[in-house]
Amino acid sequence: MTARPTRAEVRNPVLSLPAAERLRTLDPDSRSALRAVLIDLQMDARQRAETSWRRHKAPMAAYWKAVSVYAGHLARALSGPAHRRPSRGQCPADPRVALTRGGSGPIREKREGEGDLPASR
View 1: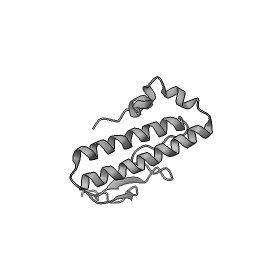
View 2: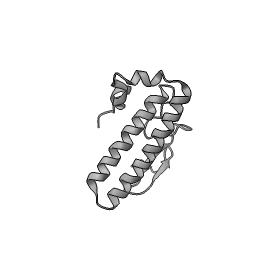
View 3: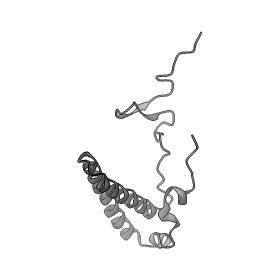
């Protein structure tokens, strides 16, 4: 498996837009209010995508998923480089804890050494 890109412009395409820098020049209160609206939009769109998928409305699910993703990209562009999320699969409190998904089950923590196969004789 190839590693995911680490450049911010690749992971968040909004950052490569010419107007993205102007978002960061907004006053902090305006940025905070706009970011809150975008986070709400992201959560609402994510829920609508899930509902559409369960109702077998794949085109609407794809639409709402795209709305959710871009709302998140815009919200993170407003927060600036200081608010970086931890890398995927890592718990910020303890780097030895990875998040795993057992088949189609829920995501859970897996501690270092847990579930490893015993050494063969």
